[in-house]
Image (cartoon, rainbow, N blue to C red; front, side):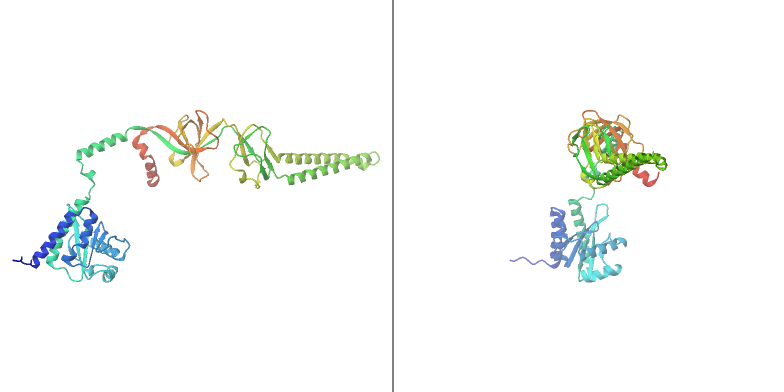
Length: 439
């Protein structure tokens, strides 16, 4: 005896129970999303379905990977956003195309089926966190809408079981949260030592600046950066072509003046006019002699020599070689390698109260693991623009032990007075708020 074939109602009920079972057996939200937009086609006959969570499409019928910029995805998100604005998002209902704007109606006609049904997904507080957009050619009847409403509750329950909306930490007991909050408040009152970081450079202490002695063009540098020099060593040579010409012209002019003076002196015994011109010619000889001496001095200045022993501190010889410089323009510095200090550029926004003798720790870029201790000696009262165009205070610190090599750069950590941890953490945000709000 063969078993009787089930009728249509029993078949629909079996398919509905199968959909709920698949929702409960989903191991992840991805599996559940795939089942929600694909498995219901046999029961409801929709052409396509879209799952939206927090206003964004998470899954589509027959598609494994959702393209966020696809036209159909944009249409569904736009249509559901309009339902939210009309207050029609929290109840399952057949979507009325007449309530959509002109752009949405045009996209609906081109991209979706004629009839659409919105199935909201709600959390335990009754708030909508997502929903299903179901579309097909025929309207959804009352029985189908009732089954969809029941299925929507099952889908929402399964989704919240796999991905709870509230973080676990918010489910802690209130007493425990209050205890943690109290501990944090006490921790913020713990005094800590203020500190700030600033770029720093090791510079010579008491070095002798070598400046351009005249207006001219630098011909060549005879030393290299950080080269040891002795007193009297030739450092820089200027182009002396014009200076040599001036010295030669001055020498010849002096010879002419002396010859003219000598001739008039010899004629003075017999010529009264020549005797009267002797004083004038003698003065002219002195003038020409002074011009010759000055030309010789300028020629001698074309070679710059070291006035003391030390090392030549400058950045790059190529920067000035072959270029005109003015009198007094800095060329280099002669410094004692054992005498160095730390120059710090503290940005205005990071400035804290610092007292003379404050502790300073230097970490060089070339050796960041070793610390060099120093103490603050001087701090500028007025901020100046740095080479990077930033306003900063200049600070000078002396090393406690042997200084590093002159010219090395790094990061200096300056230590100030103690303050509560809350002030240490909120100092800059409070300063920014005062600058923005003006209180």
